[in-house]
Image (cartoon, rainbow, N blue to C red; front, top):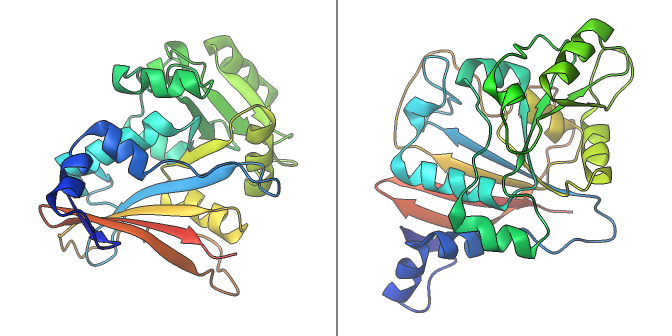
Length: 258
């Protein structure tokens, strides 16, 4: 993997560092907490050259070995992975696994052995018999609204999941979701979408960082963009932090300008 931006100053040594998981983890480390930010919300998404968020309904065809390395590192750094219910269904989400490579780093930060998977679902139309709910190392969290169907809430809790409320009625408020997770000690947040959830976070003004993999692929078709939700009246500006490259895939990192 090669660093394109900022331009490396140490020649090949920089590339050698990025070849290790520790080096990548250092490159993607979360910023130090700030008094005015209850949590840091980072998104990790992949896009084709023509802007598709997936191919044939899934993001995996746009990925690569290097993309999966970055995917694993970002999960290894996070307290919680926040994902929408539709993405859970389409991508066949499973519990986050314990990775020995991040054990010491997580222990030093007081994190559990694996990140918590947080599923955002207003209707709770989820299969609570799946391993995501019945067999994780860290109990899966379901974020829903105050008006969620009590029977579905009981089904979620019976599977072993924790149910948290973040919104009135039958909707989940994205800004409240961040505050609720921060209140439960999950301050290093990673969302993996899908596009609808990312669009909601962006429109609510709570997205701090975007890690976008640009795949050297053209797909055409009708797939949505990586953020597909309410229009942001005044587009948010992000500044580039880093750009890495491997086999034509670009791994970009942008931070919101405040």
